[in-house]
Amino acid sequence: MELLILLGLPLVGALLLALFGQHRWAPELNVGISFLTFVAGCALTARVIADGPMLALAEQFFIDPFNVFLVALTAFVSFTTALFSRPYMRVEAHHGRVNSGRLRLYHSMFQLFMFTMLLALLTNNMGILWVAMEAATLSTVLLVSLYRSNASLEAAWKYFILCGVGIAQALFGTILLYFAAEKLLGHEGMSALLWTHLDAVKGQLEPTVLAIAFVFLLVGYGTKVGLVPLHNWLPDAHAEGPTPVSAVLSGLLLNVALYAVIRCKVLVEGSIRSELPGQMLMAFGLMSVVVAAFFLWRQRDIKRLFGYSSIEHMGIITFAFGIGGPVANFGALLHMTVHSLTKSAIFFAVGHAAQKAGTQLMDDIRGLLVLSPTVGWGLMLGALAILGMPPFGVFASEFLILTTAMREQPWATPILLLALGVAFAAIFGRVQPMVFGETTAKPLPHPPALVPVFVHLALVLMLGLYIPPFLAHWFRLAAALIG
Figure 1 (cartoon, rainbow, N blue to C red):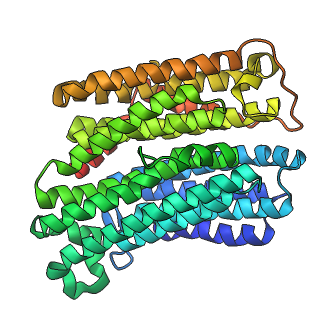
Figure 2: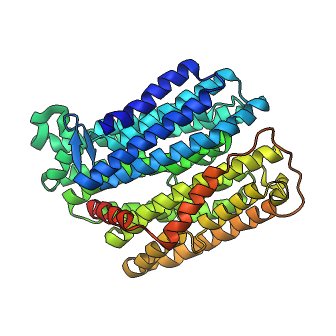
Figure 3: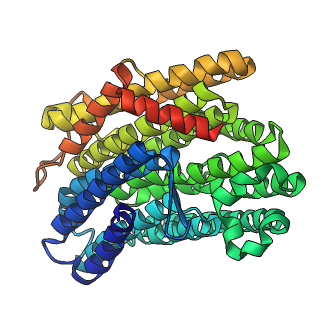
């Protein structure tokens, strides 16, 4: 029942908002549906914690500690993003950047995007996982192009083409996965693509075919993760789309795509009994961290800046999953959580800051602390949190990952430290003058929605100081499942 409600609510919400999304009460309906989805996610999480992993609906859906933790995170961030978008999109309408038709498109596609991400997380079928990831791409292309400016249309086309090519690679990898399982599970038809069935016989699957499949799956889903050199779509999509879309792209979609990669990694490692998948993840992750850190210095647009920051942090998480083991996996899961919360909070603050200044160019945004202390402090604290300053949770997760790297992969530790230092200098050097100094900003016709910003930052601060026992147990179970 919880599963049906969790998937049904955003799908019904997308249909309702496609019909009524232009009305003044549409943002409230969007918030209400997102809240009920979050409640259903909490109920499903409680069920899994109490009863353990479970299969549902003819084994087409599988819920375990790994994906249910991401379901809860996705539902929570989508709810807070809906709260933020309510005043934000009204200001955009006030400025004439969107009309009633585009607001209807925005609200309906937002709910459809939530449905596709939850479907990708909950499905047990690797084929449906691919379909859900493709549907997420199509829905977000429409969101990125919402403003219909030349830049937003270019960003949407780049996103569509690059992720379309990537998802085609993932389709070929999925076909190879079925081919490898066909001799053992061929009598089951499409059920041969069920992850639980594949996991049960992974030691008997053809290792050569699975190794080739993983290359295609990593390239395909890695494109949506934003791993270098497959990252070109990400900064443009973050910069040109509405800020709530940037928040869910960075805070949620990247996690879901990486989840797909890790599910595939578990199967392939169990089949080929080699460290090749982990080594590939470490290589892509480390390259992403280094390249993104140095690209941060060249940015002039505040949303592009934090887009490259997302590439850097997804590189850190990918590198940690590549190392593997209980501590590195625990650190990666914790980093997924705190990155999602922190980066979405930063985009909330950045959205209000850009509206106040009338521009996204960092050189033209000054003195936020004078005009709106809450926006200024939200941006400053968010930047400090994402840069790994103690006592925020990003520091705790990066500390776990770095100390594990010192023991398991000592050659990589100096490279990671150098990249993190470069990223710290680049981001702090840009954000500090934006927050302090003389202001050129303008008052907004609607008060900013800053409750989500500080709720997210409070959670990140708590996770840096104290991880509740049930959450730590949850992470340990998920880390053990990953291997």
